[in-house]
Length: 157
Image 1: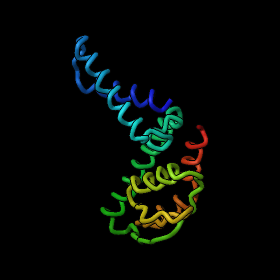
Image 2: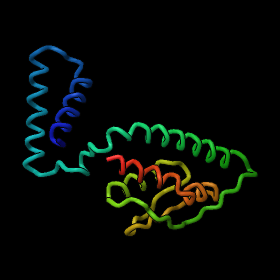
Image 3: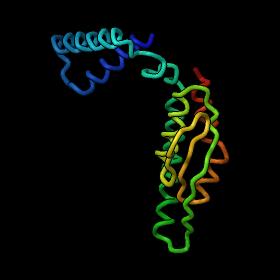
């Protein structure tokens, strides 16, 4: 399943980026993608984490929610920088990751880092060490909303 999905993803990407739709080029694209998949299979690098097919259906909804959160965090950080009255209280703290697998923890940590005003410093078993620019950012993470959404993303498998 993962090999077929990888092959289709590679071919779709190749087709979109090449812009050439003649039979010869399409054949060469299929051939090159098949060779890459065979090499990846021989290297044993195609698995649940390297090509997470199980996330395909729920990932777009998560990306939309994360995009909204990134925009809101950008606005908050911009206000704090441009308005002298806004408090900047940096802090380092730990949050518990509710995900069972490493992929879920990595998605959670990267989502935190993508959100302006927060950076994941370290992952220690089920704890993430976070640096936040303000108490608002810290409170948002400690509310657990992002953790619940990432956990739900993995549970949709």
